[in-house]
Length: 414
Image 1 (cartoon, rainbow, N blue to C red):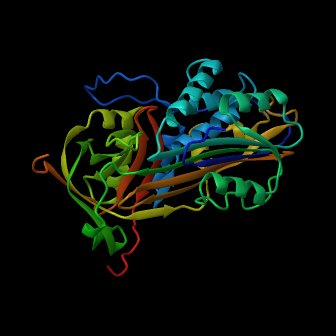
Image 2 (cartoon, rainbow, N blue to C red):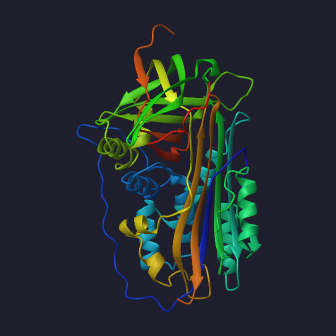
Image 3 (cartoon, one colour):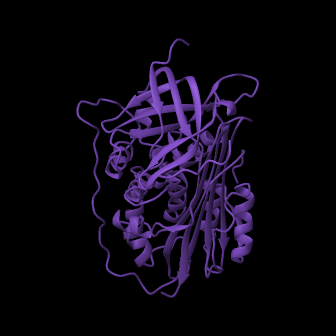
Protein backbone atom coordinates (compact mmCIF):
# COMPACT_ATOMS: atom_id res chain seq x y z
CA UNK A 1 0.00 0.00 0.00
CA UNK A 2 1.24 3.47 -0.87
CA UNK A 3 0.88 5.92 2.01
CA UNK A 4 1.60 9.58 2.51
CA UNK A 5 -0.80 11.91 4.22
CA UNK A 6 -4.38 11.86 2.84
CA UNK A 7 -6.83 10.30 -0.06
CA UNK A 8 -9.84 9.12 -2.26
CA UNK A 9 -11.49 5.70 -2.35
CA UNK A 10 -12.59 3.52 -5.26
CA UNK A 11 -14.38 0.30 -4.57
CA UNK A 12 -15.41 -2.54 -6.82
CA UNK A 13 -17.86 -5.40 -6.45
CA UNK A 14 -18.40 -8.13 -9.05
CA UNK A 15 -21.10 -10.33 -10.50
CA UNK A 16 -20.83 -13.74 -12.06
CA UNK A 17 -23.03 -14.34 -15.08
CA UNK A 18 -23.65 -16.53 -18.13
CA UNK A 19 -21.10 -16.79 -20.98
CA UNK A 20 -20.37 -13.52 -22.80
CA UNK A 21 -22.62 -12.35 -25.60
CA UNK A 22 -21.37 -11.49 -29.05
CA UNK A 23 -18.61 -8.94 -28.94
CA UNK A 24 -19.02 -5.44 -30.28
CA UNK A 25 -16.90 -2.36 -30.44
CA UNK A 26 -17.67 0.76 -28.44
CA UNK A 27 -18.06 4.11 -30.15
CA UNK A 28 -14.94 5.92 -31.25
CA UNK A 29 -13.89 9.01 -29.32
CA UNK A 30 -11.69 11.73 -30.75
CA UNK A 31 -10.55 15.18 -29.68
CA UNK A 32 -8.09 17.83 -30.79
CA UNK A 33 -6.54 20.99 -29.49
CA UNK A 34 -7.95 24.34 -30.46
CA UNK A 35 -6.94 26.18 -33.64
CA UNK A 36 -3.36 27.28 -33.79
CA UNK A 37 -2.25 25.47 -30.63
CA UNK A 38 1.15 23.81 -30.88
CA UNK A 39 1.50 22.72 -27.25
CA UNK A 40 3.47 19.47 -27.32
CA UNK A 41 2.64 17.12 -24.46
CA UNK A 42 3.18 13.52 -23.57
CA UNK A 43 0.12 11.34 -22.87
CA UNK A 44 -1.63 12.38 -19.64
CA UNK A 45 -0.86 10.53 -16.45
CA UNK A 46 -4.33 8.99 -16.61
CA UNK A 47 -6.63 8.66 -19.60
CA UNK A 48 -9.83 10.47 -20.38
CA UNK A 49 -12.43 8.47 -18.46
CA UNK A 50 -12.41 10.64 -15.35
CA UNK A 51 -12.53 13.90 -17.28
CA UNK A 52 -15.30 12.63 -19.55
CA UNK A 53 -17.43 11.46 -16.61
CA UNK A 54 -17.01 14.80 -14.82
CA UNK A 55 -17.97 16.67 -17.99
CA UNK A 56 -21.12 14.55 -18.35
CA UNK A 57 -22.09 15.22 -14.73
CA UNK A 58 -21.60 18.97 -15.26
CA UNK A 59 -24.69 18.84 -17.46
CA UNK A 60 -26.85 18.24 -14.38
CA UNK A 61 -28.41 20.52 -11.76
CA UNK A 62 -26.64 21.09 -8.45
CA UNK A 63 -23.16 20.65 -7.02
CA UNK A 64 -20.98 17.86 -8.40
CA UNK A 65 -17.63 16.52 -7.19
CA UNK A 66 -15.61 13.70 -8.73
CA UNK A 67 -12.13 12.21 -8.56
CA UNK A 68 -10.91 11.47 -12.10
CA UNK A 69 -7.72 9.89 -10.76
CA UNK A 70 -9.57 7.57 -8.38
CA UNK A 71 -11.98 6.39 -11.07
CA UNK A 72 -9.17 5.69 -13.51
CA UNK A 73 -7.07 3.75 -10.99
CA UNK A 74 -10.08 1.55 -10.15
CA UNK A 75 -10.84 0.91 -13.83
CA UNK A 76 -7.17 0.12 -14.44
CA UNK A 77 -7.31 -2.51 -11.68
CA UNK A 78 -10.41 -4.01 -13.32
CA UNK A 79 -8.69 -3.95 -16.72
CA UNK A 80 -5.84 -6.01 -15.26
CA UNK A 81 -8.40 -8.78 -14.72
CA UNK A 82 -10.08 -8.54 -18.13
CA UNK A 83 -9.62 -11.26 -20.73
CA UNK A 84 -6.86 -10.23 -23.14
CA UNK A 85 -8.17 -8.88 -26.48
CA UNK A 86 -11.78 -9.21 -25.29
CA UNK A 87 -14.43 -6.54 -25.83
CA UNK A 88 -14.16 -5.55 -22.14
CA UNK A 89 -10.36 -5.29 -22.28
CA UNK A 90 -10.38 -3.15 -25.44
CA UNK A 91 -13.18 -0.86 -24.22
CA UNK A 92 -11.37 -0.21 -20.94
CA UNK A 93 -8.07 0.49 -22.74
CA UNK A 94 -9.87 2.90 -25.04
CA UNK A 95 -11.68 4.86 -22.34
CA UNK A 96 -8.51 5.02 -20.20
CA UNK A 97 -6.41 6.21 -23.13
CA UNK A 98 -4.02 3.25 -22.91
CA UNK A 99 -2.00 3.15 -26.13
CA UNK A 100 1.02 1.08 -25.08
CA UNK A 101 1.32 -2.53 -23.99
CA UNK A 102 -0.20 -3.54 -20.68
CA UNK A 103 3.31 -3.78 -19.22
CA UNK A 104 4.03 -0.21 -20.35
CA UNK A 105 0.78 1.09 -18.86
CA UNK A 106 1.43 -0.66 -15.55
CA UNK A 107 4.93 0.86 -15.42
CA UNK A 108 3.41 4.29 -16.08
CA UNK A 109 0.87 3.79 -13.29
CA UNK A 110 3.60 2.84 -10.83
CA UNK A 111 5.53 5.97 -11.82
CA UNK A 112 2.41 8.11 -11.31
CA UNK A 113 1.92 6.65 -7.83
CA UNK A 114 5.55 7.43 -6.96
CA UNK A 115 5.16 11.01 -8.21
CA UNK A 116 1.91 11.57 -6.33
CA UNK A 117 3.53 10.38 -3.13
CA UNK A 118 6.52 12.70 -3.52
CA UNK A 119 4.94 15.45 -1.41
CA UNK A 120 6.16 16.65 1.97
CA UNK A 121 4.86 17.29 5.45
CA UNK A 122 2.67 20.25 4.45
CA UNK A 123 1.01 18.56 1.51
CA UNK A 124 -0.58 15.34 2.61
CA UNK A 125 -1.36 12.72 -0.03
CA UNK A 126 -2.38 9.11 0.41
CA UNK A 127 -2.89 6.49 -2.28
CA UNK A 128 -4.05 3.07 -1.07
CA UNK A 129 -5.45 0.05 -2.91
CA UNK A 130 -6.96 -3.16 -1.62
CA UNK A 131 -8.53 -6.36 -2.91
CA UNK A 132 -11.26 -8.01 -0.83
CA UNK A 133 -11.25 -11.46 -2.43
CA UNK A 134 -13.94 -14.13 -2.45
CA UNK A 135 -13.51 -17.66 -3.75
CA UNK A 136 -12.35 -18.10 -7.32
CA UNK A 137 -9.97 -15.11 -7.53
CA UNK A 138 -6.90 -16.12 -9.52
CA UNK A 139 -3.53 -15.99 -7.78
CA UNK A 140 -2.05 -14.23 -10.85
CA UNK A 141 -4.53 -11.35 -10.41
CA UNK A 142 -3.72 -11.15 -6.71
CA UNK A 143 -0.03 -10.95 -7.59
CA UNK A 144 -0.72 -8.18 -10.11
CA UNK A 145 -2.70 -6.16 -7.57
CA UNK A 146 0.19 -6.44 -5.13
CA UNK A 147 3.03 -5.72 -7.56
CA UNK A 148 1.47 -3.00 -9.75
CA UNK A 149 -1.00 -1.34 -7.37
CA UNK A 150 0.71 -2.19 -4.03
CA UNK A 151 -2.69 -3.46 -2.89
CA UNK A 152 -3.40 -5.07 0.46
CA UNK A 153 -5.32 -8.33 0.05
CA UNK A 154 -8.06 -9.43 2.44
CA UNK A 155 -10.71 -12.12 2.47
CA UNK A 156 -14.12 -10.73 1.52
CA UNK A 157 -15.78 -8.97 4.44
CA UNK A 158 -19.04 -7.26 5.37
CA UNK A 159 -19.86 -3.74 4.20
CA UNK A 160 -19.18 -2.57 7.75
CA UNK A 161 -15.60 -3.90 7.69
CA UNK A 162 -14.84 -2.48 4.24
CA UNK A 163 -16.40 0.87 5.16
CA UNK A 164 -14.23 0.97 8.28
CA UNK A 165 -11.10 0.48 6.15
CA UNK A 166 -12.15 3.27 3.77
CA UNK A 167 -13.00 5.56 6.68
CA UNK A 168 -9.56 5.01 8.19
CA UNK A 169 -7.74 5.72 4.91
CA UNK A 170 -9.75 8.90 4.24
CA UNK A 171 -9.28 10.22 7.78
CA UNK A 172 -12.99 9.88 8.48
CA UNK A 173 -14.19 11.79 5.40
CA UNK A 174 -15.82 8.79 3.62
CA UNK A 175 -17.78 6.80 6.18
CA UNK A 176 -20.36 4.66 4.35
CA UNK A 177 -19.17 3.71 0.87
CA UNK A 178 -21.14 0.45 0.79
CA UNK A 179 -24.82 0.44 1.65
CA UNK A 180 -25.08 -3.36 1.76
CA UNK A 181 -22.82 -6.38 2.09
CA UNK A 182 -20.98 -7.30 -1.13
CA UNK A 183 -21.84 -10.59 -2.82
CA UNK A 184 -18.45 -11.04 -4.46
CA UNK A 185 -14.90 -9.64 -4.55
CA UNK A 186 -14.31 -5.93 -4.05
CA UNK A 187 -11.53 -3.67 -5.35
CA UNK A 188 -10.89 -0.47 -3.41
CA UNK A 189 -8.75 2.52 -4.31
CA UNK A 190 -8.30 5.40 -1.87
CA UNK A 191 -6.99 8.90 -2.52
CA UNK A 192 -6.88 11.39 0.32
CA UNK A 193 -5.57 14.93 -0.11
CA UNK A 194 -4.96 17.64 2.46
CA UNK A 195 -2.87 20.72 1.73
CA UNK A 196 -2.42 24.28 2.96
CA UNK A 197 -2.43 27.21 0.56
CA UNK A 198 1.01 28.60 -0.22
CA UNK A 199 -0.46 31.99 0.63
CA UNK A 200 -3.49 31.49 2.85
CA UNK A 201 -6.47 33.75 3.36
CA UNK A 202 -6.59 35.92 6.48
CA UNK A 203 -9.74 34.98 8.41
CA UNK A 204 -10.05 38.61 9.49
CA UNK A 205 -10.74 39.50 5.85
CA UNK A 206 -13.55 36.95 5.45
CA UNK A 207 -16.91 38.70 5.21
CA UNK A 208 -20.55 37.72 4.84
CA UNK A 209 -21.29 38.58 1.22
CA UNK A 210 -23.65 37.75 -1.62
CA UNK A 211 -23.31 34.64 -3.80
CA UNK A 212 -25.45 34.76 -6.94
CA UNK A 213 -26.62 31.17 -7.42
CA UNK A 214 -28.90 29.90 -10.18
CA UNK A 215 -31.76 29.39 -7.73
CA UNK A 216 -31.35 32.86 -6.21
CA UNK A 217 -28.97 34.91 -4.14
CA UNK A 218 -27.63 33.79 -0.77
CA UNK A 219 -25.18 35.10 1.82
CA UNK A 220 -21.92 33.17 2.08
CA UNK A 221 -18.56 33.45 3.82
CA UNK A 222 -16.44 35.24 1.19
CA UNK A 223 -12.66 35.00 1.57
CA UNK A 224 -10.39 37.81 0.31
CA UNK A 225 -6.73 38.25 -0.61
CA UNK A 226 -5.97 41.82 -1.73
CA UNK A 227 -2.86 40.83 -3.74
CA UNK A 228 -2.19 37.12 -4.32
CA UNK A 229 0.95 36.19 -6.25
CA UNK A 230 -0.22 33.41 -8.53
CA UNK A 231 -0.89 32.52 -12.16
CA UNK A 232 -4.02 33.34 -14.11
CA UNK A 233 -5.34 32.85 -17.61
CA UNK A 234 -8.39 32.39 -19.78
CA UNK A 235 -10.01 29.90 -22.11
CA UNK A 236 -12.57 30.66 -24.79
CA UNK A 237 -15.42 30.60 -22.27
CA UNK A 238 -13.87 31.31 -18.86
CA UNK A 239 -11.19 32.96 -16.76
CA UNK A 240 -9.19 31.05 -14.14
CA UNK A 241 -6.58 31.45 -11.42
CA UNK A 242 -4.03 28.81 -10.44
CA UNK A 243 -3.59 28.76 -6.66
CA UNK A 244 -0.47 26.95 -5.40
CA UNK A 245 -0.33 24.82 -2.27
CA UNK A 246 2.67 24.77 0.05
CA UNK A 247 5.68 22.75 -1.01
CA UNK A 248 7.38 19.60 0.19
CA UNK A 249 9.78 21.12 2.71
CA UNK A 250 8.01 22.64 5.70
CA UNK A 251 11.16 24.63 6.50
CA UNK A 252 11.06 26.44 3.16
CA UNK A 253 8.52 28.88 1.76
CA UNK A 254 8.28 27.12 -1.60
CA UNK A 255 5.31 26.25 -3.78
CA UNK A 256 4.62 22.56 -4.21
CA UNK A 257 3.58 20.63 -7.31
CA UNK A 258 -0.07 20.56 -6.22
CA UNK A 259 -2.30 23.46 -7.24
CA UNK A 260 -5.97 24.39 -7.52
CA UNK A 261 -7.72 25.95 -10.50
CA UNK A 262 -10.66 28.23 -9.74
CA UNK A 263 -12.59 28.69 -12.97
CA UNK A 264 -15.19 31.44 -13.47
CA UNK A 265 -17.36 31.20 -16.63
CA UNK A 266 -17.77 34.26 -18.85
CA UNK A 267 -21.51 33.63 -19.10
CA UNK A 268 -23.61 33.55 -15.94
CA UNK A 269 -26.12 30.79 -16.81
CA UNK A 270 -25.78 27.00 -16.55
CA UNK A 271 -24.87 26.73 -20.21
CA UNK A 272 -21.94 29.07 -19.56
CA UNK A 273 -20.70 26.83 -16.74
CA UNK A 274 -20.93 23.75 -18.98
CA UNK A 275 -19.03 25.54 -21.76
CA UNK A 276 -16.30 26.43 -19.26
CA UNK A 277 -16.09 22.76 -18.23
CA UNK A 278 -15.88 21.72 -21.89
CA UNK A 279 -12.91 24.05 -22.38
CA UNK A 280 -10.94 22.11 -19.75
CA UNK A 281 -12.28 18.55 -19.93
CA UNK A 282 -13.39 17.88 -23.53
CA UNK A 283 -9.82 17.99 -24.87
CA UNK A 284 -6.98 15.73 -23.64
CA UNK A 285 -4.32 17.46 -21.52
CA UNK A 286 -6.27 20.72 -21.41
CA UNK A 287 -6.02 21.20 -17.62
CA UNK A 288 -2.27 20.67 -17.87
CA UNK A 289 -2.17 23.12 -20.81
CA UNK A 290 -4.07 25.74 -18.77
CA UNK A 291 -1.71 25.42 -15.80
CA UNK A 292 1.47 25.56 -17.88
CA UNK A 293 0.33 28.49 -20.01
CA UNK A 294 -1.02 30.73 -17.25
CA UNK A 295 0.66 34.12 -16.71
CA UNK A 296 2.24 35.12 -13.40
CA UNK A 297 0.95 38.21 -11.66
CA UNK A 298 -0.91 39.66 -8.71
CA UNK A 299 -4.60 38.89 -8.36
CA UNK A 300 -7.18 40.55 -6.11
CA UNK A 301 -9.02 37.33 -5.25
CA UNK A 302 -12.40 36.84 -3.59
CA UNK A 303 -13.94 33.36 -3.33
CA UNK A 304 -16.36 31.59 -0.99
CA UNK A 305 -15.71 29.02 1.67
CA UNK A 306 -17.46 25.88 0.42
CA UNK A 307 -17.93 22.20 1.05
CA UNK A 308 -19.33 19.45 -1.16
CA UNK A 309 -20.21 16.13 0.46
CA UNK A 310 -21.77 14.16 -2.39
CA UNK A 311 -23.67 10.95 -1.69
CA UNK A 312 -22.53 7.91 -3.64
CA UNK A 313 -23.78 8.11 -7.21
CA UNK A 314 -23.79 5.57 -10.03
CA UNK A 315 -21.35 6.33 -12.87
CA UNK A 316 -22.57 3.38 -14.92
CA UNK A 317 -24.75 5.47 -17.29
CA UNK A 318 -21.88 7.86 -18.06
CA UNK A 319 -19.41 5.01 -18.62
CA UNK A 320 -21.84 3.19 -20.91
CA UNK A 321 -22.24 6.35 -22.97
CA UNK A 322 -18.46 6.43 -23.30
CA UNK A 323 -18.54 2.93 -24.79
CA UNK A 324 -17.79 0.85 -21.68
CA UNK A 325 -20.42 -1.86 -22.09
CA UNK A 326 -18.67 -5.22 -21.98
CA UNK A 327 -17.63 -4.59 -18.36
CA UNK A 328 -21.32 -4.60 -17.37
CA UNK A 329 -22.67 -7.12 -19.88
CA UNK A 330 -20.05 -9.81 -20.52
CA UNK A 331 -18.19 -12.38 -18.43
CA UNK A 332 -14.79 -11.27 -19.68
CA UNK A 333 -12.86 -10.92 -16.43
CA UNK A 334 -11.25 -14.34 -16.75
CA UNK A 335 -7.80 -13.13 -15.65
CA UNK A 336 -9.41 -11.99 -12.39
CA UNK A 337 -11.67 -14.90 -11.51
CA UNK A 338 -12.21 -18.55 -12.36
CA UNK A 339 -15.94 -17.87 -12.12
CA UNK A 340 -18.16 -16.07 -14.66
CA UNK A 341 -17.88 -12.48 -13.41
CA UNK A 342 -18.95 -9.00 -14.53
CA UNK A 343 -19.47 -5.54 -13.04
CA UNK A 344 -22.99 -4.54 -12.02
CA UNK A 345 -22.34 -0.88 -11.18
CA UNK A 346 -19.69 1.76 -10.54
CA UNK A 347 -20.31 4.15 -7.65
CA UNK A 348 -18.35 7.19 -6.52
CA UNK A 349 -18.59 9.39 -3.44
CA UNK A 350 -16.48 12.55 -3.03
CA UNK A 351 -15.91 15.15 -0.32
CA UNK A 352 -14.23 18.52 -1.07
CA UNK A 353 -13.71 21.18 1.63
CA UNK A 354 -12.13 24.59 0.94
CA UNK A 355 -11.52 27.34 3.50
CA UNK A 356 -8.98 30.01 4.45
CA UNK A 357 -6.27 27.48 5.30
CA UNK A 358 -6.42 25.13 2.33
CA UNK A 359 -8.19 22.06 0.95
CA UNK A 360 -9.26 18.64 2.21
CA UNK A 361 -10.61 16.18 -0.35
CA UNK A 362 -11.44 12.47 -0.40
CA UNK A 363 -13.23 10.16 -2.81
CA UNK A 364 -14.58 6.62 -2.87
CA UNK A 365 -15.42 4.79 -6.09
CA UNK A 366 -17.08 1.39 -5.97
CA UNK A 367 -17.05 -1.09 -8.85
CA UNK A 368 -19.82 -3.46 -7.80
CA UNK A 369 -19.64 -7.11 -8.85
CA UNK A 370 -22.06 -10.04 -8.57
CA UNK A 371 -22.24 -13.70 -9.61
CA UNK A 372 -24.73 -15.47 -11.86
CA UNK A 373 -25.68 -13.37 -14.16
CA UNK A 374 4.73 42.44 -5.76
CA UNK A 375 3.11 45.75 -7.11
CA UNK A 376 -0.53 46.57 -7.68
CA UNK A 377 -2.82 43.65 -8.48
CA UNK A 378 -3.05 43.24 -12.25
CA UNK A 379 -6.47 41.58 -12.28
CA UNK A 380 -9.56 41.29 -10.10
CA UNK A 381 -11.10 37.84 -9.72
CA UNK A 382 -14.35 37.72 -7.75
CA UNK A 383 -16.02 34.31 -7.46
CA UNK A 384 -19.53 35.35 -6.40
CA UNK A 385 -21.45 33.00 -8.70
CA UNK A 386 -21.25 29.32 -9.81
CA UNK A 387 -17.73 28.12 -10.69
CA UNK A 388 -15.45 25.11 -11.17
CA UNK A 389 -12.76 23.95 -8.71
CA UNK A 390 -9.99 21.54 -9.77
CA UNK A 391 -7.11 20.01 -7.77
CA UNK A 392 -4.18 19.17 -10.08
CA UNK A 393 -0.67 17.75 -9.63
CA UNK A 394 1.85 19.39 -11.96
CA UNK A 395 4.49 16.69 -11.39
CA UNK A 396 2.44 13.64 -12.40
CA UNK A 397 0.06 15.80 -14.49
CA UNK A 398 -2.93 14.21 -12.77
CA UNK A 399 -6.35 15.73 -12.12
CA UNK A 400 -7.07 14.52 -8.59
CA UNK A 401 -10.44 16.17 -7.96
CA UNK A 402 -12.89 18.23 -10.02
CA UNK A 403 -15.97 20.02 -8.69
CA UNK A 404 -18.85 22.09 -10.09
CA UNK A 405 -20.07 24.52 -7.41
CA UNK A 406 -23.54 25.98 -7.90
CA UNK A 407 -24.43 26.58 -4.25
CA UNK A 408 -22.29 27.38 -1.19
CA UNK A 409 -23.10 27.15 2.53
CA UNK A 410 -25.02 30.09 3.95
CA UNK A 411 -23.02 32.31 6.28
CA UNK A 412 -23.72 32.28 9.98
CA UNK A 413 -23.22 35.27 12.26
CA UNK A 414 -19.87 36.94 11.62
